[in-house]
Image (cartoon, rainbow, N blue to C red):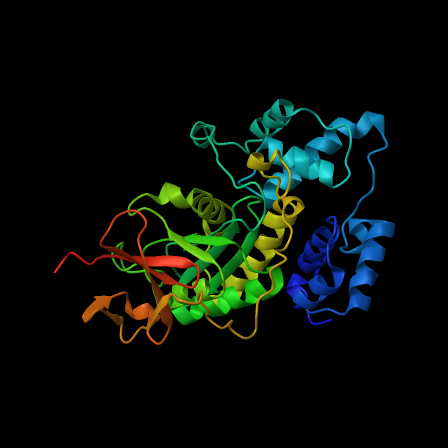
Length: 375
C-alpha cells in the first residue's frame, strides 16, 4: 500500500478510528487514504481481532502481579512522561488506560509520582489555569488555519502551516513549508480536502496569504475557498484569541516538538511533524475533550473535494457583472470589489438594510458593501 513507512502505523490507526464511526463510508475513506477496499477491510479485521497490537509492535502485556503493580505503574508513568515531556498526570493516566493498563492511581497520585521523580517544574505548573472554551457542535463546522511563527533551521527557515477542526481539535494539517505563498497553502489544503472532505467554514488570520487587511480581506486563495462552497472569515486584527484553538495547538507544538531542537532542513522537520501529528490525534488525551483523543471525536466531511471547480451560477434576474482587474461597472460607475475576483462573475443586490447600499456577492458569500450615495 502507498503509505510512507514513517507514517504507516499512525495512518492505519487514524483510518481505523474514522472507519469505526457510525455510518462511515469505507469506500470513500479508502479512496481518501489511497488504499484499496481489500486493504481497508484487512486492517479493520486485524484491529477487530487483535486491537492495536495488530497495527503496531508494542507490548500489551497486562499487569497481573499484585505485589509489583505500584513500582511497575510508576515505571510506566515515567516512561510516558519521558516520551512526552510536556504531558501532565491526567494525560499520562488516560494514555496508560488507552494502552490497556488497569489499577492506575488517581491523577493527584500520578502527579506525586512525577514530582517525586523530578519530572515537574513548579514554576511551569503554576502557569496552567482553566480556560473557558467555546466549540462548534459537530466536526467540520469550522476549521481554524494559520501559520505558526517561522523558526530557524540549519538550512533556511520553516513556516509551519496548521489547520485544526474546531469541534474535535483534530489536526488536519501540520506541514513544514519553506514559504507562506498562496500556492503553497492551496496545495496543502487540496491534499487535506481530498482526505477529509470540505468544511462548512474556515477562519484565518488577516496576513498573507489570507488577506492584506480588513479593507482588503480576500486573495486568490480565499476566492478559491469560496468557490468551493466554504464560507471564509478572518480573525479580528491583534486578537489572536479568535483563533484560540489553533493558537493553543501552536503552544503544544512548540512545547512537545520544537523546544530544544534544531532541524537540518524541511525534510527531517516534516518527518518529526508527521510522527507527532499521529501522537496528537490518536494517543494524546485532550483535557478540553474530557481526556478523549481528537480522532475519537472527528469524522470526515461528507462534502467531497471536487477535482473540477464548480460553475458559478446566480438566480435568474440578478444583476451579474464580470470583475475586471478588481472593478465592476454599474449604472455608469466603476465599483471596486477586489482583484482577488478578477475574471469571475459577481452578483449585485440592493441591500435590505438601507436604501442606496449595494451588496456584492461572490457565490454564496457577501464580499463587499458599496454606498452608491458616496461620490
